[in-house]
Image (cartoon, rainbow, N blue to C red; front, side, top):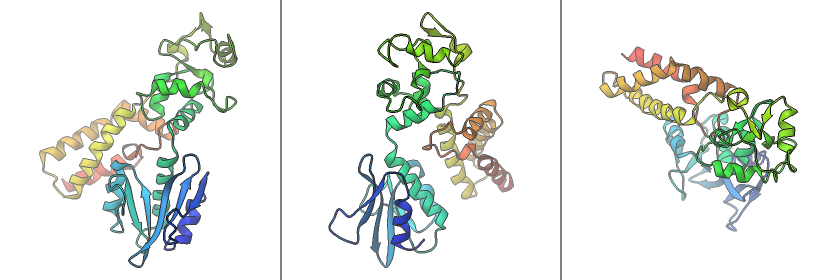
Length: 292
């Protein structure tokens, strides 16, 4: 991918994307997300090359910069949250497209949308707590936001909010889900027993089987360990300690649960998931062994 036309065409292929030229300067062509009017792709010519500005997760910004010399801190934008991709032919199309797609995801993903997608993942015949939905949506502290979003459910036929209960298994108030007793009726239709307005979570609770906090922790450890391995410092106590933590996690039941959740598509896209790829953590351990 070397031309502006190719980049714009790919950017416009996403749902709700539209092109904009806000600066009355044809050199600056943007692609925005209609849901919030925010730009996720900036295109412009500079120093003889078409440049793209794309939004990035701050933890992943340096991943792309380290991988390609043609990826640099965002031109005229926040250097932690934006990268500039120079279309000089050195970056494979698939990686350029991945960076644009990641930018789109970051710009278009509102908390409510994440919450609704999390609710859709609750299995038939199971219930989840507000806290579980918040965790699957990417932030376990936004339980209150979950409640607000569920009571504004835009598509009850496809977003099964009735499967969400509080931390004690108690159902929502009578005003929800179409009137008194409606939530219990919907749950019973799926074979879930409701007694005195409560569901037995030990029996019907959704076992997500993973912790976003734990995965995030080991992602950061893996980043630090990868950098140390690149530098070839196999004998350092710090690297030994990092690799021991990664190996213990990789051999644990927790890793198996987290990996299964990733394979089932339960984890938020915002997670890099390097430690959960089949070869990610394993390959790093092998690299370290060869280095040692």
